[in-house]
Image (cartoon, rainbow, N blue to C red; front, side, top):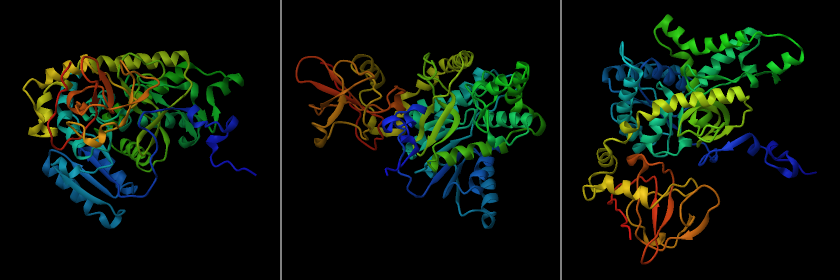
Length: 479
């Protein structure tokens, strides 16, 4: 008798049901679950950073952890305190450094550092200061650990996750914000407290912004597999909507209350982030409400916005976004939450795109600058001769194509690169342009090819998220 190897093939004709429950993320295919050395970096050794580090260590989630902070004495003191407890902890190598080179080859980089809001300071000014801070954090993390996952914890987490994505040049599946993972835990605790059940038996999500415009998904709450609100309606048990709203308010105000009482939050966010680290590094494919690039999901189409949605996490980051049923009211609230975040993102674009040549030199070295007007040249090329594509292959390198790349098959659609079916073409020219997303802020994640129309032999531009060590950035001239 035929025996199914996976419950995901229980659909008609062996239909893979997992494709029905999740919308895949580009680049999010699961990797081989082989055992290997793992390394986590935590940037920032304040109350939150140390709670995260301590929880990760005690739960034996990594072989090596590196702590980075600008305050040398504080950093040395924290790492010594942890090292002195080695006899009581799982065997973990604990490092600390002011230099980001120590973070090299990290699998997961957790960023907790952030500018603190000064008395009377506007939220907008605080955001500008955080962008300036992130310019010194994210590029070196991406440089020394180009294959890592970046997990942003600093607040405002949704906007800063967007900033980290822009500055890193990573595909969106490898830049994640802790988002509403902790909010959802608070939500589950409060519901469990009202119903006198264990919080682990409650499935409930807070989505959208990690903040005042967050959305409680009441329609999908279940306890022990029983949908709560629909069960109450079937049993004709009355409940007050005001009670539900008050629970949501308690979730939103939860962090403020902890800060009022003890001065800061630490343990809950420590456990929350540790749960994300476990799901990511152990390829557990668990679902967490985390901050992801939400454009295209649930009718969110106003721009590139990061906010929390229930997402499946694995070794490659975000594997997919869960297709949770939302009511019309919940969808509208989610889109309004997206608008709130987009408004903040829009005023930061100039900050992100500034100091382009300075970042180019810091990432690629002195050989990467050309004729002194490189920024304008690349900007013109971006507008005139190529477009981005999500359906392409990753390439590492910079400069001209090598001999073995000539004639290499490539996804190419004549005219303008666009989403949808592509057909294979081959490179016919050695002249190619390699541009770094992490340097220029272009929305280019993987390699794409675009035919350059004009006289002479056809040429193709290549765009990639490259990690060059040497060589000169070249611009393919228009014909």
